[in-house]
Amino acid sequence: MAVDRNLALRADGAPVYKPVWEYLLATPREAANVSAASYIASPIATEAIVSAFGSGLATATMAASTTPLPVTLAGTSVKVRDSAGVERSAPLFFVSPAQVNYLIPTGTVKGAATVTITSGDSAVSAGVTTIAAVAPGLFTADASGRGLAAALALRVKPDGSQQFEPVAQFDPAQNKFVAVPIDLAPETGQVFLILYCTGLRYRSALSAVKVRIGDVDSQVTFAGAQDEFVGLDQVNVRLAPSLIGRGEVDVALTADGQAANIVKIHIK
Image (tube, rainbow, N blue to C red):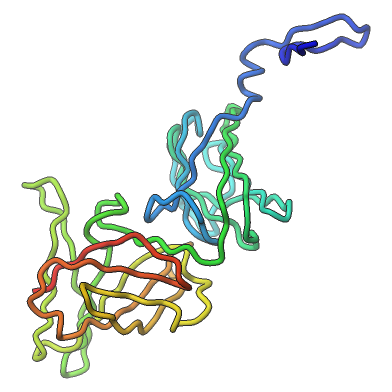
């Protein structure tokens, strides 16, 4: 016999129907969880920054303004249950009705995981993902996961002084980000590309992080957590003089064999 899920029983056994709104709030809606850098859905690494998309995820729009990050914003909370069955509250960066940005909690183990988002009005949304030790995603200038890298060039001048330079800037006339060409002329000093990413900090070794720029395998001098921002990782790459004059080139990164999204820079 089919069971009506809206039906409950009183203590005396008489049927009582729950209000429809109560049933709807108790039924999880779907939420898609992707890397906040690459927008790739799976896998996602422990302590990586994630964007969840859905509807009714929050009753207001709010960004975290303190660290440690809160586990509740505008009444919304996120819980991650890992493959070992352990559920943890996720630190929150931002919430809105259609999007929630959060951090995969420290200690979340590899394997299948369930993400449950509860909004301030008790509406529940849920989604699944796969947790990995390493799953790199590179941030881009326009936050699309494609195109120009969200990066800086660090120039070490012949006198030992250092200078940071943008590799992209917003052009109001074109209403988009455009490349700032990187000058690799030997007399201007040695130049390093600083890439910002997430999901890379638990790479097995520095040698396990590979970066290919155009057709040139480039020297990685650092790959790990960026100390200032929660969940943000950083990769420093020496730009070889052989790249001079290449123009727009792809930047391809892998860590422990896991490929990140392709981003671009422009070499003068």
